[in-house]
Image 1: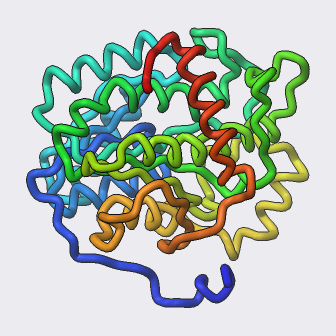
Image 2: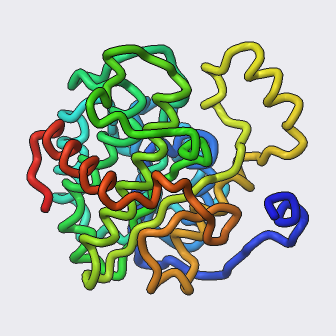
Length: 297
């Protein structure tokens, strides 16, 4: 089926986003940047949230040039530091009257062991907990902006993952691939839990696999992994193709009444059995709240 889709005509939509505001994390490169260009072309105000402001400013220039939309800006956000997340959310809540689309796109992939400023293992910290906190801090503004959407960029790597509730920070042994897969499974479980809590608010949530995309995230792969990626590269996507499912989840009108699902190749897809485990999703939600010292019923 995947191979068949590879040859089918790609999804496209003329949907406009005039008057809408979008926040995209990690949009200074790769699929995040291509998503920013596409949504800016549709008339949205686009806020690029990045840790590296020099790269972010260069990306803003590119997005404005490619889209012809001047309403693009960048703001500092370090998802590995809850203080930075709070400062960013505070600035958005004070400065923006609405937020219609939040795209949690930033991520780190199979990196060496490291910790965030708050002491979380880097991959679960940035990919899940950072975005969990960010969404929590922006949720009231998003609800006031309904109809609104929250999109979490996951990966098919979630299928190899499990959530270690007893040692989510991998302190008893670190395997970078397992830690990545755990963080991507967390994205899917967060999405389904979030969708349940948002029922009836006009805010919907989606998670997705962007495809095997040739991006900067590959930089931490080892020799054999890099070699494997080169072999399959004719079947991998460039960043424009990789961004399509994110864009689909952000603008496709038929998804307005759908929420909590997982998508791939601009269509509903099957996630792993663990990704559908409501009990695990609830336990992860409670653990995330405890780790971040927040209350989010």
